[in-house]
Image (tube, rainbow, N blue to C red; front, side, top):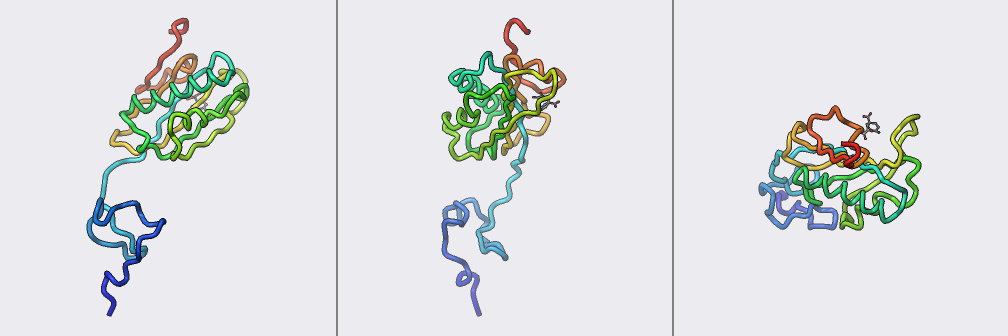
Length: 171
Ligand SMILES: O=C(O)C(=O)C[C@]1(C(=O)O)C=C[C@@H](O)C=C1
């Protein structure tokens, strides 16, 4: 008869990144034989953000996107490890750089990132970079703070929990 131990696979690169016993309950999963991890109650939440550029210039874009990402993390007490993925959109007048590059320059090298074009709806605000981040957090949906900076502060005046920093002329 096979004992549970003899059936346990040796650790491979595909095994969960846990030291023996660490973060587990000392059992293995019936199907995968992976160690059963402790139940945690951390939820997946989505955080929105947006910023407007003054001009479509690379250095300026990198600064504004870094400011946006930093503010989203800070406002929600998040670290890089809490990020699941980040999607950026940019209006079609933004051509100087990929917003995801700004995030990578900040050290976000292991977070899946994606850039896409925003819809071109007549009268839409120009030069806007938007962000949608999925994160692991203890915050409830109500407690999540969405971040709208510079001209983009005018986009969602309806939001209850928002960190809006308009430019002085707009405030
Ligand atoms: O939140 C924004 O960035 C908006 O511009 C608002 C809005 C919306 O109508 O909800 C519009 C377009 C974006 O793709 C996402 C959201």
